Structures are given as C-alpha cells and as structure tokens.
Amino acid sequence: MDTPPLSSSPSSPSPPPPLLLSPSPPPPLPPQLGGPIWSDRLHTQEFVQRVLSSVKQNPSRFGTSRRIQGVLSVVSEELEDVPLYHTVDQLSSTIHCNTPSLLQFRYCW
Image (cartoon, rainbow, N blue to C red):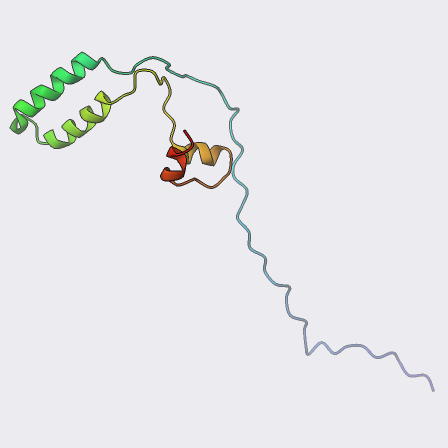
C-alpha cells in the first residue's frame, strides 16, 4: 500500500521576515558651481566705525542697540589680509574627519 507524501500543516505559518529599516537616499544634488566668491573686503571700516560710535552715543534710539553693537563689533574685526572666511568644523566636515579641539588647531600654526 502506497502512502501519500506528508506535507506540512498550514496551521503553523512561518514568521514573516524581519523588517529592515534604513534611511532613504538623499535627493540628487544639483551640479556644484564654484561661485560667487567675493575676495575683497565686505565692509568699509570707516563707515562701520561711524555707525558703531553713533549707536554707542545714543543707545536708546534703537531697541536693539546691544545687538547692533555686537554685529558691528564683529564686522569691524574682519581681517584685512584674509579674503575668505572658513571655520574649522566646516573644513573638517568637507574632508570627513573629526574636528580637532581649538587648542590643537591653534598649536598647528
């Protein structure tokens, strides 16, 4: 007597495969262009100093005089011999490396 082959019972379905989650790919980037780059001073030092002294002489004239003084102070410290501004963290990000501490960076010079 021949017996039919045994088959697995449908009462115990196999578990679904694990769900693998991963971030979606970023959208395509537009072609990289190299500009515009301004390689000269951005501000006239004499004008910045006149506005800064005017704000300091009459701080009640502007509601945000402290902020204006802060921005103008930073602007007045713009280096004359460095046409482009870079930060260490941006440079490190560009070359895909860890950002060195400021102390390490200063001792490189």
